[in-house]
Image 1: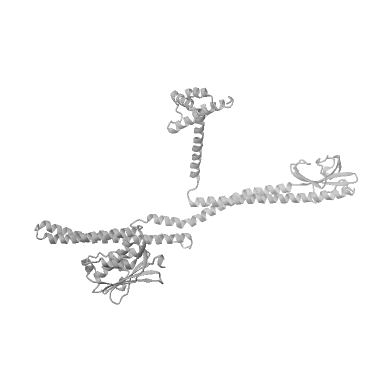
Image 2 (image 1 turned 90 degrees about the horizontal axis):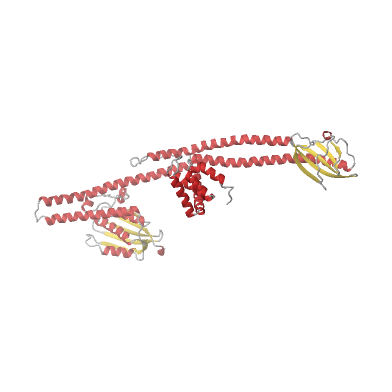
Length: 550
């Protein structure tokens, strides 16, 4: 590497980067390579970035150690490893500062974007306007000069050149020059002057534009040169038109655009800022209201703007979401309270029985006490199982589904029921297949039959048929009990609901059977409803048929 290029660089680096380290200076100068200089600078910058305060002198050992490491690993490797790292750090710094400068609010970004788009459009329109104006003025000047040159050319061809030449409209000067450069005729303002140009067009016309000639007044002239054949030979007719008015028009237009464009951009920015602020004001009101909504203030709703726009639809959607959220929270709280109440009763009874057993250690009483305790424990276990199933249904946990023959499932479920106080009559249509989970559908049917066993007087009927019109399997469980009042047909499917509380509690019901059955039907894309029946209750489940049955 030549010695002429690195010495000034080394001197500047020693003054700004090494900050007076004499030993470091000696080590760098001994290397005499530009790569060593780059590696040393990067090394000292890394040391300073790691915590060395500005102005602190690095020790002699540190300087020599760095240089020794450079010699050991090779300066080329430091150059390859250091320069890309420095480039990446510089790029990261630039991007970090660019992110800081980029506006963070939607209002500012919208204003910046609209202003930038209008600025680009105005700039393009301004340049186009200036170009068109300049071209039109140039064309007018050229036409005027060409017309005057053609007129004089015809006079020259006829040998009737007057001297001085008269100036027509739009021409500032005229001059006729022969092939040897002698002026044959000229207008009054060019009398006694030499040829304005030394162009030699062979045929037709030649156009040229330059400034200051022939009057040296600082204004450009549009000069048209036209050849003409005369009895004395070929001559060149120069006709010129001043571009003073054209240049003045260009300057005035440029100044007007230079002043008007920033004013228009400022107006666009202010209008965009104001309009965006008004458009986002309802959004800010919605945000502030949502920020105030907590678990204890779910009754609050966001304000809905009067305008029927996207923000109003957003507010209505958010209010609907808050309605569902409030309803879910209310149901959850009611569910927790009801579950606590249901659990408290058997636990209280169980505790009382245990306290009686401890207070009266009579072995003759233990079988009855243990039997009652076991019955309450089973009731607690069933209630816990129901609550766990409800939690899984609420979580919408995926379960395996496959084609099931509902008639076969109904027969199996009825066959394994032992100890029912009322016999179940069945009317099952064969070949009714649905897509479902066997365990869940068995639980649905079991809950419906258990409910019928609690309330029936002496007759229970289970019917299954396929409704091809609605493409559903219709499962009906009816009994001859007291029935369900019309006002309670929807409430009966709510959790912990008992129409006859004392009777249901004595029979072991917790008010969860029909709620679980409806949730299972819903998860199978079906429905479960209580429908009118002349003698008792009639619960109907409708589940879509399997695709193979359609």
